[in-house]
Amino acid sequence: MKLETPQLFKGAFNQYLDERGYLNPIDIVAVANAINIKSFTLKYQLMSLSLHKHCFRGLHYQLPPHAQSKLVIVHSGKILDIVVPFDNPKESKIEKYELETGDILFVPNTYAHGFLTKTPNVSIQYLLDHEFNHESYNGINAIDYIRQFTLNYDVSVSDKDSDFVDHIRLDMTKPI
Image 1 (cartoon, rainbow, N blue to C red):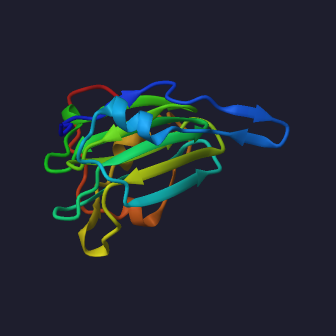
Image 2 (image 1 turned 90 degrees about the horizontal axis):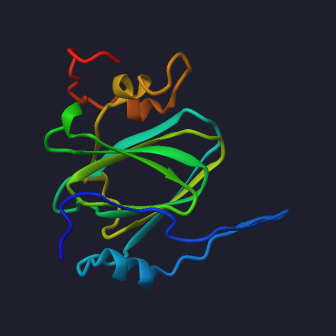
């Protein structure tokens, strides 16, 4: 089975907290079976820690033949997760998900992915089915779109993410 659209799994694992921190056991085989992705083979992992609220990372993707499907696992904090088909990045095609600790989102390899932190200390793990390939790496500039979710707060975004040439085509007839 090949998933064509993102798929969300709320509360996919339990977090065990104590005064030292947390432990997040994840049964990857059970997650893979629940998602029912026969073609997803773990080949690459990334970890992300965002210390501050209103930090934006994304929208990133890799072009074929190095396109990456990914499992986005939220280990701590809350995010607004954003995915959009990278071949047609317009506002009407954006899918948004409210994710928190214990949630997992599957993102197919035809989507760009990014997130906005809603709390400080957000820790995310990515499990990917292809290695990083610098020549295939690309992104979509989404800063104008993201600003509507942060009201008057400053958004922390890297120069790299704000320099992407492609922008999400916004529907300027809709009020923000």
